[in-house]
Image (cartoon, rainbow, N blue to C red):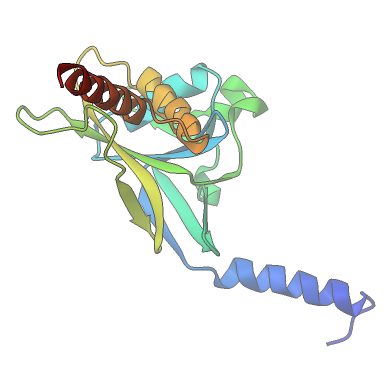
Length: 201
């Protein structure tokens, strides 16, 4: 191998290339978006409304990375997702067919790839199924050995999923800053109960 590039530049470039080519990877059936700077992977069974929810989020100013199939690769402890080359910027909406998000909403509505920060699964509403109502349970979802924050959202008529996903993203950003509303409320309730017991004593 002969090159006029400096050895340090060649070695650095080869390392980047090999890391890219040899990184563990897989595909997931879902939608990946950039919501408030967070990589949000939306999962759910076919027909549950993932693409329609993603389209609503795009209309609200967020960015589409991939619809239907997400290619994910692991670099260290970071997961990065993108769209298959043939489907980049495209979305399938039942009743409308394929639409090109970049052509329809502009270049600011899409991005080529995004690191994954959280996973949200949309589930059809099942009477009797228990969902987290306080936000104290911190569940995770494993992808290629990396644990990501995981949330389940029941899908039912009248629920605005786009708004709920925005709220989930904002709430996660607050958690990153150390503020957990449910935990704060629980601590204040415990303090009130302790104070009441002290007064009675």
